[in-house]
Amino acid sequence: TKWLVTNQSSELLATESIRFWPTILLVLIYDLGTYITHRSFHVFPTLWKFHRVHHIAKYVDVTASLQFHPLETFSYTLYVVFASLILQPQFSELYLVSVLNCFFSYFVHSDLRMPYKLENLIGYIFMTPGHHQMHHDKDKKIHEHNFAAITTIWDRVFGTFAPAEDKVYYDYGIKDYQ
Image 1 (spheres, helix red, strand yellow):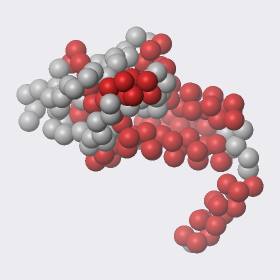
Image 2 (cartoon, helix red, strand yellow):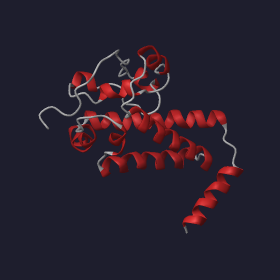
Image 3 (cartoon, helix red, strand yellow):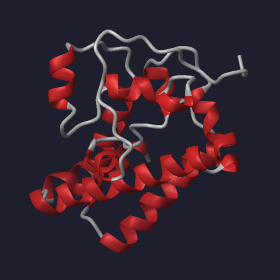
Image 4 (tube, helix red, strand yellow):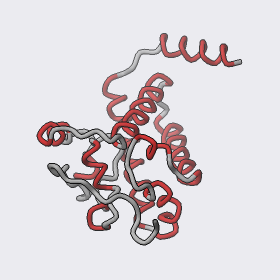
C-alpha cells in the first residue's frame, strides 16, 4: 500500500504543472486562514486553553512546531479542507503549499539567529525566527504580534506586525504556569 500511494502521488505531481499566480493566491489565502485561526486561539479564552500547550515551552526550537493540542491541529486542518473545497486547487499546488507551510513552521520555530538587517529584509514579505520568537514571550504586550505562518502581509494588514529586534532574548513560556 505504501508503494502504491508513493508512486501514485509522484506520478500525479509529475503530470501536473504548477500554475504560478493561482499558487501565489493559494499561499496567501491559506496564510490568511492560519492568521485568523492563530489569532482566534489567542483572543478567545476558551481557545487559548488549547493553544497554550504550544506556548508553554521554555525554549523555542523546532520541536515547538510540533507541540500543539489535537483540537488546534484539527481546526487548522478543517480550514485547509474547507478552503480546498471552495478553491479546488490542483493536487500539486496544494502539495506545494503544504510543504511550504511545514517548512515555515520549522523555520520560524528554529533557534536560528539571523543578522538583524537580513532578518528584517526577509521580513518585509516572510515570517522569520526573530519575528516569531517574540510571539512566544511571556509578556502579553510582546506576544500579541506576528500570528501568520508564512508571510508578514496579514500581520501588517491587521496591525499585529512587529519587526524583529536586534540582540534581544525573550523570556519564553506562560506567566505563572511553569
